[in-house]
Image 1: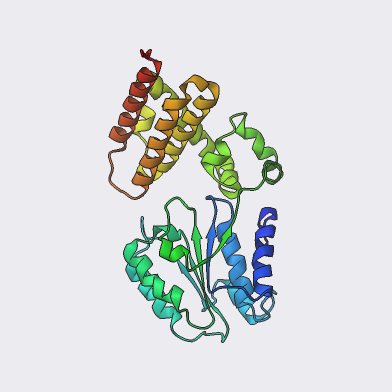
Image 2: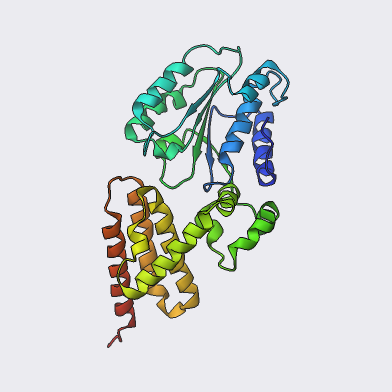
Length: 306
């Protein structure tokens, strides 16, 4: 069964308290940054709901089916490409309208629920409003894109936050030494699970290379060769690195803060837009950001006459 990581324990206790007080809704929204363990949390909750003894005992028939990955009353839904499609949601709803194979609860976990488009979100609404008895929906969201208010209003909300620096350091152990003294890498690479994976692979090296490429590009006013090689799936990381590079400049050069904050807003908006698009000319997009940076820098440095 799922062993909860230390920073997930308080979240589990909040959920258990709601359950013991009989305040558990049929729809739960799990929110938090990427890599913080929301998937593990969703899995643990599903185990509590599906267990024959309602506590994730690890020994009953339902728990054994879960451990084997074959529980017929656990449903998983994730995006296909950039979106959760309406056909997938309708198929899930059809599966949830029947009776439970094991005679207990039925649980559906929707990963990256923010990637439902309007049609798929609307298709889910009726199930959220009038769930069948024993049906539980767990919506997992990074919060990169806002969910429809009509969806959020019908869900109980549970936030999985980033752990404290001390807890994070204890989890990473000696791997944390690779981060160096730039404090933004955890915010760029994600929560503890994503950060550990990046440190164990080439993820941190790639992000460092992107930072150096942005520094070179912002100084020269021309997109560097490294940035022209960024693939579509790296676009979000590249823009996140740029965002925190600009934020770092705010700290080291306070006199530039006013126009840098305006630039930060522009980068954040660009990231949200790219996250919903495909087939974008990233080199042109990055070059425009560099040009805008240069323009704002020149305006910020120009003397003002009253």
